[in-house]
Image (cartoon, rainbow, N blue to C red; front, side, top):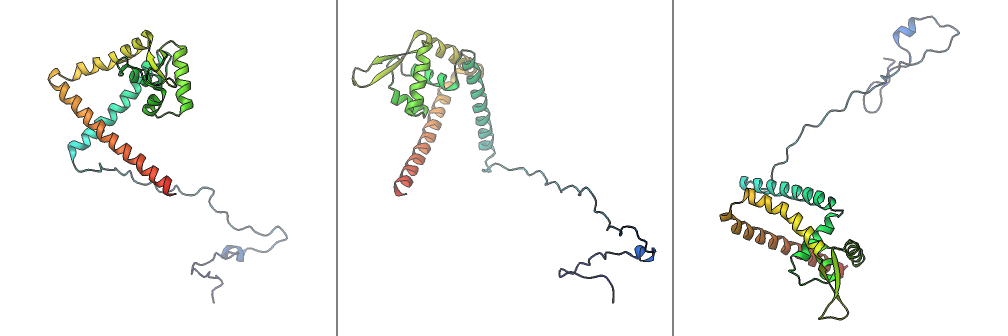
Length: 212
């Protein structure tokens, strides 16, 4: 019978005394230690790089999605730098543009908070900050004495005009006059489609919250 034992998984267990040690005369010195395992394990296998294809087989749509993502990235970058150059944050600039689009009618803090998706406290801080920099001003709301309207000052209008000029120049550079109206209509339709999706998500979350 072999002196090598076998474990339940059928792998032989290395005997404590090797053949070489059997032939070596015994002495009074310390017993021989088992052989040491390698100090370093072999490197783990590296997974191959996997390319994730577009979710749609439509090549033109895939290119459009990529171009849109790049446009979003460049827009965020420009807005950040142009805002920071004027001591503002990107949300500050978005609020200024929102007021500029109101054509001098003014907006309520609630309307601005819904547009920017800010809480009441955050919206109040934003208004205070821009008012301190003289970019906006509070005015009484003629239709509701309990409310106020936020208006741009000449300084705030200048900020909207200067930052907006960067985008106007880019559009003039790449979009011909004949294509501008069609592109504007496409932007409007895309914005409406995304707005419908966003509202549907909010309604779904509200229903789930009520049912929970």
